[in-house]
Amino acid sequence: MAIHKPVLLKEALDFLKVEKGKRFIDATVGEGGHALAIAQRGGIVLGIDQDPRILEQAKRSLGNKAVLIQGNFKEIERIARENIFTEVDGILMDLGISSWHLKESGRGFSFQKDEPLDMRADPNLSVTAADLLNGLTKNELKELFQKYGEEERAPQLAAAVVRARSLKPFRTTADLVGVVEKVRRTKDARRDRIHPATKIFQALRIAVNDEVENLRSVLPRAFEVLGAGGRLVVVSFHSLEDREVKRFFRQMEEQGRGLVLTEKPLTPTAAEVAQNPQSRSARLRAIKRNGRLASRT
Ligand SMILES: C[S@@+](CC[C@H](N)C(=O)[O-])C[C@H]1O[C@@H](n2cnc3c(N)ncnc32)[C@H](O)[C@@H]1O
Image (cartoon, rainbow, N blue to C red; front, side):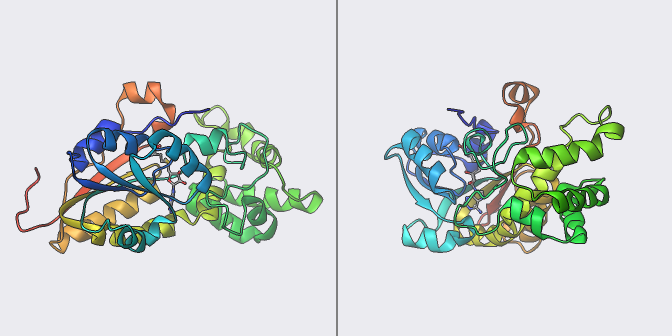
């Protein structure tokens, strides 16, 4: 089993100020790496994840050290209320998908495996990555690749997808990788340090799971669930997410409702990246909800 290594773990725990008896929500509990560390420091944890399969992994690593709830984090207020976890001391969001999703879920998140092009992190969602590739217009595909993948060859890739699907509908990751490699291989291969399909896979995953909208909608809701002095810590993995977090935190500070604890986002050390390459694009930002006294400690 691929074990998920919690990213920026020490930094997250320090910004959350985990102490015995304090209450925390891990809104992206995944395999439970961060949640377990919080519980081991004496924190009381409510863990949320949209994926029932990954909650089974979390249950295995956490046992009865946390309350685990399946749901979308945009429902954090309801979930917190129903579990008597309001006015909490801290909320953690470690966005995206877990190593288990990439390596073991069989849902086509990785271009390194040949699997059905599904990419739903929540199996209750109705639209898969294959549905998008086979159903969107050329222009919609171009916009999706540009907006969520920041892919410079979006027009050429959209055209190639439309050409390929007129011969055979997209079903597997290999179908997509084949098309992407034909477009990007010649000119880009030497310059790129990432696999040519990285950005397209990211774009499809974000669209299938509505990741940017979910983040936009959870931030103010999570802030409401914090008690005075409570901390919200967000680890994001691409610039679209980081921009949303930065904008929201700044807004809270301007309104006098919070104090941003990270002037610049924290990034993993070279040692962490060497040990866990998936951490390389992580950015951590933290904010403290204002109580009566506002201080950065
Ligand atoms: C990077 S992993 C978290 C790993 C976890 N911190 C650990 O140490 O094991 C992100 C998790 O967040 C979940 N997730 C992403 N968006 C979500 C959402 N909108 N609602 C609930 N869970 C979400 C994913 O299903 C995934 O399991």
